[in-house]
Length: 575
Image 1 (spheres, helix red, strand yellow):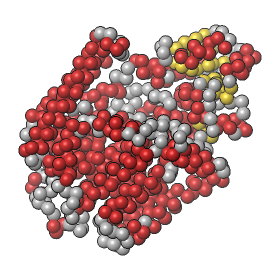
Image 2: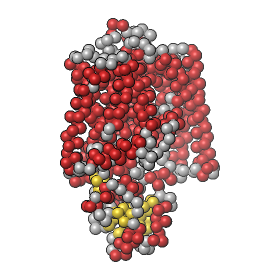
Image 3: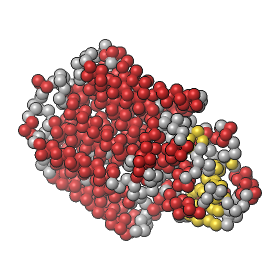
Image 4: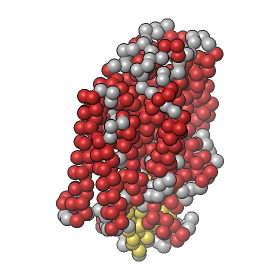
């Protein structure tokens, strides 16, 4: 490799840009917006209850057993809360840290793979520059809309994606080491440990993704003997990591593994009544939006990838790994009955690697530069249409979408979209391949920062009960009996610092925990709730969405005080 292409100050510039980008769009605005129901308040409250009760083995939600996930994700959120306090920043922090560490793993994967001991003597002179790939792949990963959207929310998918990225990265390092060497065993142990951590985060999916990816990769490389030789050590490490907690939860809660396996895996992936049921093409239809702003330049990248994946060197092996890593899990997730857009996050590290290779190689050709320019212009056109729609929705009655009452939010949205359009146009005009890619990726950057402050007021009313609950929390002592519908119960627990909320109507995600004897009486139908209110006047609060409260109004006694955060938002009634 010609290292003169990548002088030291250029490498540092790349690294500073990556660090600054990560801080600007992932860390600094993290606490700016309230927690969103139901996911963020759930992953705040379960760790809070672990801390408050001292029970770090059995997850509880509203004081009820909650067996939808193993414990590691809750532990990580609990540690963040212990370090930074019970606030929005602490609740969300594990998600962007997982994204940042995933980007770092991508960086080291490219660096170590392309300095493989197998290929150093025969480095291809036509390969993309090392520092360019090391920088561009994490950069592409960080600015994908899907990665950004999930990476700023308190959900467990980021942690799962991190551990799966670590699993595949370390296994690949083992593949690039001398067979039977201490180095190979070390990386196999690290890979297996990451599998164990992934299993402790979201369960058996931790085994399915690496087996599909790495098994197919070894077969593609004709390393048939390594299918077993390189499998037993990671499997042993994964078992040793997950076994202690697995035994402890079984001893405390014998039904955990039965419920977790059949409900969270078999039913969710194969059941006809799976939660969030979608058809096979769900992810395919949403993929163009999830990979923005790279959607329109994928033809350029595809051309560059084709030139590498059949080669024998490190570049070819890494591209073949990335293809297995992206395509096979994507098919697996598409075959599952239950689908949420966050599930597909583990496919984005290999997507970023393939895009970096493909763009750097493809932009060497004049024809592909034209394709890239057209892609950048397509982005500019799309965002211009979004800008026009945004203006129309704010200053007319188009679709009834006048979301913002504050002029500064409108101004911020306009500025963010105009900056994005200008950067897309500069990307199309630039003649330097690095600058073209970087400008394209940076184009939505200001939008990413602004979106924390620009959530539509109507969405905040429906999805963010925090300000309302915090306002009245000082007036609700421990003698106050609190009722809530299931969708809001987690938020009520978090903001009121309680784990004894009564559920009115359907059990929702508390359904399983409510089946235990010690949960008797914690769920009431509307008639029983009305009787309880009549028999215990003076210290009862009911919290639910206004839509639900209006449906219940005629079946409940007249409240002495009512308030809400909007006619279509959340209501609080006092009896």
